[in-house]
Image 1 (cartoon, helix red, strand yellow):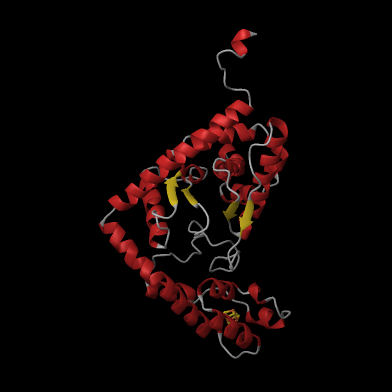
Image 2 (image 1 turned 90 degrees about the horizontal axis):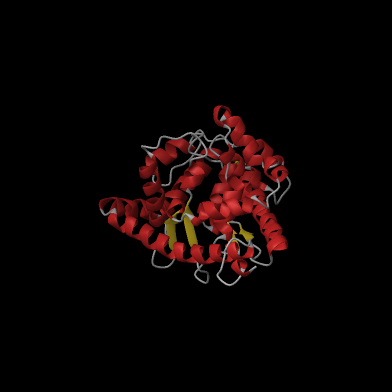
Amino acid sequence: MLDDHDCIFCIVDWHATTVPYDPREMPQRIFDAALVNIACGLDPDRCTLFVQSAVPEHTELCWALMTVCPMGDLGRMTQFKQKSEQHRENVNAGLFAYPVLMAADILLYKATRVPVGEDQLQHLELAREIARHFNGRYGETFPECNAKLSPAPRVLGLDGKAKMSKSLGNHLGVLETPEALRRKLKPAYTDPQRLRRSDPGRPEICNIFTMHKGFSTADVVERIDRECRVAGIGCGDCKLLLADAIDARLGPARERAAELRANPGRVIQALDAGAERCRAIARETMREVRDRMGLRVAAGKAGDR
Ligand code: SF4
């Protein structure tokens, strides 16, 4: 959370519909996503949190942006190729256009900084490209958006291969019990030989070390960086230290989540307030977009010709 920024966080339910899902479970998934985000520190009094489908302008702007986005650019997206492989039975047009909807999510609010993981940099670059295409064709409308990466920009799953993902079953759940975290971390993939052979300054090739950078104190990170190279610490102990660090950060989040579950109205209220604020911003942007694209017929203009 950046206190000097007006931060907007969106639960992207339209994006979630591009892969097979059970509609009966979706409301709970949306609610849980909001709850987890608030429990982990998004304070609805200091930022805006809302559900994408509650602001129809996201899909409307997506259509406008699709008309300036070259097909070839979408075909090159790595995530499209990966997801098409994962969901061969359902390679739909929504999956293909996913990055354009993501561009709409960003540009609708004229965002200038977007917190993303390294895997989303390609999509963000495309959003910048789409904004340039639109501005070039219809006049300066959207600002340049830049990435904001965290200290652990690329966290792999516990298998050490694919990106951490619930659907791949290689994830650590934010609200999991300390026991479950330790149980899952125990067999997590590491590669100490490779790490010790590596050049100094490249310890990030171990996924456990990357997670330490996200959760542990600077002292612990420095100690592991040093001791791992000389076999001063074993992977088992290193993972226990990581579990302690995760507990320290997520323990309070688990407590807040339990409070919110007992009082779900607070989550719904935050989402409603967020959607109302975002609809007002989005309406304004779409008014400008329609004007730029020549889609508003005003009395005294076209009618006079
Ligand atoms: Fe990775 Fe830690 Fe093992 Fe080093 S000691 S390889 S950082 S898990």
